[in-house]
Image (cartoon, rainbow, N blue to C red):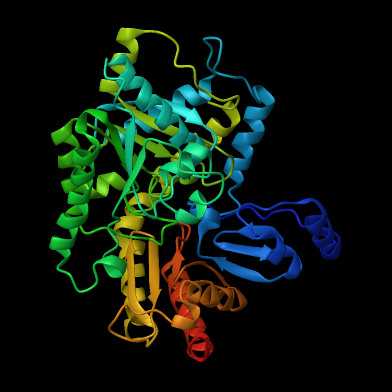
Length: 468
């Protein structure tokens, strides 16, 4: 593994940055009133390997890989060099006007190679800049496909409650988070939400196989209620990330695929988080042995070094586009951005050369699962689960149950998260759980550091939670 480059040292005026942040900057998905009351954002100024450093000089192990994305770790000089060289040669050109540039063409071929490992029918790629845009592209492409097929009434998408598919109007509507739907009059028409495969939260004590059958059957029931002739597609993440690292029972996805095939609807896997090694495979659906018709990808595609996303499209869809002809009037200024594509291609090269996918599957993923088991005996832990290098710790008030703290229900996770940050670990608190998603370059010792810090933070949180 190449050592991360040492970033340049800049002397930032923290007080000035804080003032400017509060005076002009609106961070993503924030309570701006609360943010101002707390004195503004935590300013991150540098990063190296799996560690980030804030403007006050505090170092934190980044247990979230940025935002589920910095798979190859920070400080990769080779990625910076690729971006520099591409910017000198051709910093930007669009893919409108029947044009293309070399990097996205080569990247599309490389992604097709990885998709073909489990599904040779996934042959083509459409580029975007974010996961939200990828899912918007899917939304429009699927409806266009059925229109070209002579079935324009097939417009309905089935998704899941508590799903996350982005923050755009279509992405947030495809998602199933009610607090997002409460803003802006969402969801838009034509989207149905069914049960999620959250065994700990919604099937506690139920036989896992029976639970998998029940939640998969909720999809079929909704298809029949809507009318199979009106349903266009089902969309889901292999493992729900922002929903709380919800890992479905092993038989769930094969059951879902069988239902989609039974009724002739398209199967979409949102791989924005699970893609590019997170579950120990190039794509998360490969872990479950299924063959989606479309996949959304982003985040680990460039390890967050530059914004880029893509949609993998199956041959049966492309064949209809080629046969019928006509413009697919969709795309973005930065679709197939050459510099972003060049960095993504180099990022995939790092994963290949360093065996990060195999290492996640065979070494660090199993090690994380084993390390998290140490938390099973903690009085606040209802379940500690992981798959590959993504995991969650459920916080409960009563051992052996899934009961939450009544005085802090829905907020126990953020309480423990803040203590983790104080103790030098960046993780995310989602409702009553702590979730983690470290860079794929993480070592066993650093995994131990994550688990030890979570345990310490749980110990500190226990008297606080029981007093609420």
